[in-house]
Amino acid sequence: MFLLALIMAKFEQAVISGAGIGLRSQHYQEILADKPEVNWFEALTENYFGDGGLPLHHLEKVREHYPITLHGVGMSLGSTSPVDHNYLAKLKRLIERFEPAYVSDHLAWVSVDGHFVHDLVPFPYTEEALKNFVNNVMQAQDYLGRSLLIENPASYLGFDCADMTEWDFLREVVARTECDLLIDVNNIYVSAVNHGFDALEYIKALPPERVKEIHLAGYEDHKDYLFDTHGYRVHPPVWELYRSALDYFGPVATLIEWDTDIPGFNVLMEEASKADQLMRAVA
Image (cartoon, rainbow, N blue to C red):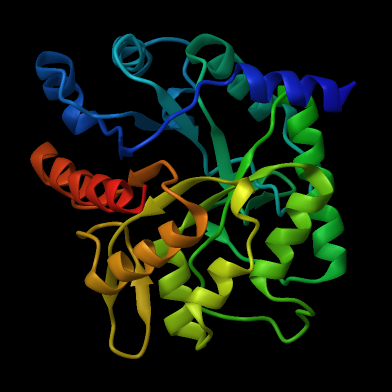
């Protein structure tokens, strides 16, 4: 029954294309007043879990004019604790109300035994962790009645006990759950520099047909490592890697993600325009 529901959900979901922009409260009024030419917006899931108030009101108004996606940080799919059905119930209400093209979360955990951390925490890429992650993804997809997009994190440390690469882990998750992928090209670049692997090898190890969305953002260079802040324009080497990713994946819908020191909306539009131009060149 789940496979049938998943097939129907994939069929019914809206399709997004081109470059989108992360929806931030600083830009609500400008977006609603000017109706800029943006292909789609990504809303941060947990910002809209309230039963009412201005965030939901503004999202409803934006949704009247633009397709949206929902991107979360709280599903904690890598945790060994049971899947939080209270969280999933809130998410399902949002999905039913706003009909997002995609729903995504991370290859990470944020809570265990009711205790939460305010960050995306890594875990070792082992067969045991894989089985746990797959089980949690399957439970979430079954509850929501649709496939999820799983995003790769930026990382700063590795685990001696890991017995597979991150890309092998993601490939297995896709094979075992029928989920899709949200590939953050900035995160791949940051992790590749920090750990010394080939970013292009990572990208070419993933199944192109399962990559439904790409994220682009900026990082900080701390000399001996890169720190993913999502607080800057996309850096030149990330643009270069993005072009290579488009050559391999095709012109996948791409988000300009900016989470700290959020600039004027015109800056985000400029970054989105660059992504659109590269997608058109590939197409």
